[in-house]
Image 1: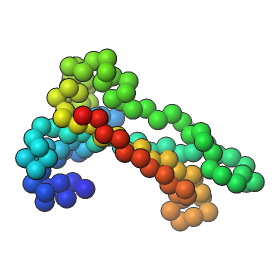
Image 2 (image 1 turned 30 degrees about the vertical axis):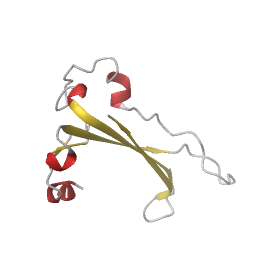
Image 3 (image 1 turned 180 degrees about the vertical axis):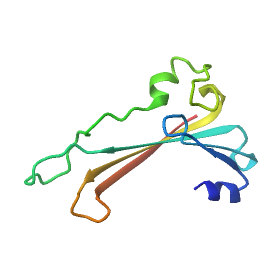
Length: 119
């Protein structure tokens, strides 16, 4: 993805494991300003072998850093972040849910995702 951003005339920086965002990009192709992409992946709660549909609960909570801090403190530059939240022109949260299936080589089944943008 970072390589594609560069070919589109943008510049990007990869975030850290515990920082925000996972990818930050900017450039004239994207309308100026800084843009943030935050990726969250969660495993669905394990259930018995007779279950017919994927469970609706996750094994652990999905924590959206922006949801817990952005609206309360938009001007603060947090440790692990590149800049204060209000300096971003847009935020994209990509959320993926999967069922762990240890019998498969990929170990992933029923992958479901969604991306929402805030600007």
